[in-house]
Length: 112
Length: 118
Figure 1 (tube, rainbow over the protein chains, first blue to last red):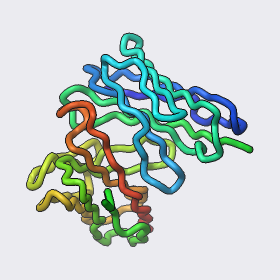
Figure 2 (figure 1 turned 180 degrees about the vertical axis):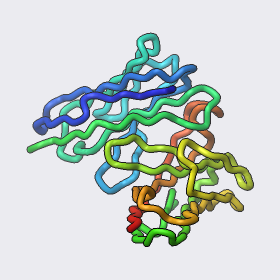
Figure 3 (figure 1 turned 60 degrees about the vertical axis):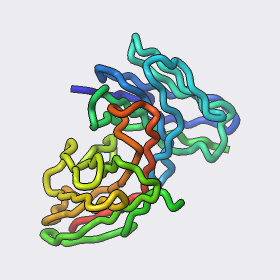
Figure 4 (figure 1 turned 135 degrees about the horizontal axis):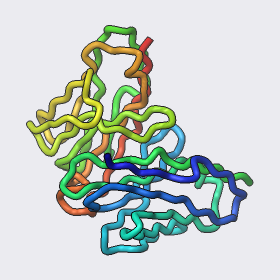
């Protein structure tokens, strides 16, 4: 069964600090990996999408990396802001499938 | 562009009642889907549609029905509500399914419907 595991489950950091969130997956064959940001009470919003041939993708202060060999991805947030407080969700799609596999998310809290 | 809209935002039902959650998108997307999100779990796919007139089951379809008569609308029907269906429901749309028609199909989510079944 396809699985996506995210760590840590929750994280608290001070404003201005950097942090890295992890995503490990067993989905095969791999099609693409997405990171979403979900603010409390809202729907997820796409941050990055990476295919097999891409090993890094940036979106402002968010940088995602992908190692398709080890089936690992990370999301690095630089110079965190209070507005970064949210849940970050990793989603992996299997080639040819209509059903993506979602991780449970990492809850990030940024304190002033 | 309104994107993906969902109504209602909140709903309380009694066990056994039926209702329809509405979802609409104005981006001419072919692929639409319904998810439920429960505490401590990832989003789970209920039903999806690859175009008008075509629907299929996701991971957790029991107790739900869908139809897709137009490209824009994808309603989700709860036939006989049960407490286990208490959840937050999200509708999403994209040009195509993420694992099939090419990878750069950004998926847009609606704001969600919070449903409580007593």
